[in-house]
Length: 51
Image 1 (cartoon, rainbow, N blue to C red):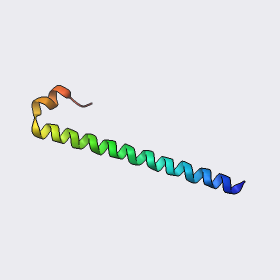
Image 2 (image 1 turned 90 degrees about the horizontal axis):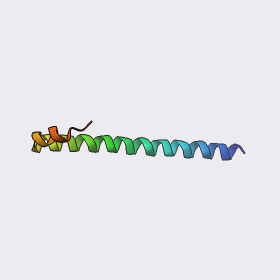
Image 3 (image 1 turned 135 degrees about the vertical axis):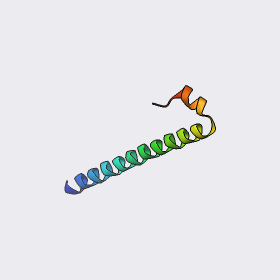
Image 4 (image 1 turned 60 degrees about the horizontal axis):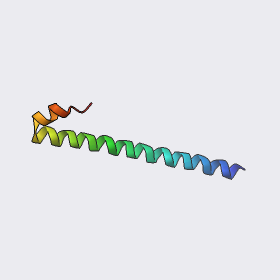
């Protein structure tokens, strides 16, 4: 029974890390996209206006 609980905890931790990593990736991607658009076309960036 103890082993099962440890496995579940480890699995949850792994999933949390995976979610965190994907959230960080999305944030970085958004920042890069924002910088790219601002650099290439300020007018377009103002029209889109990322919230």
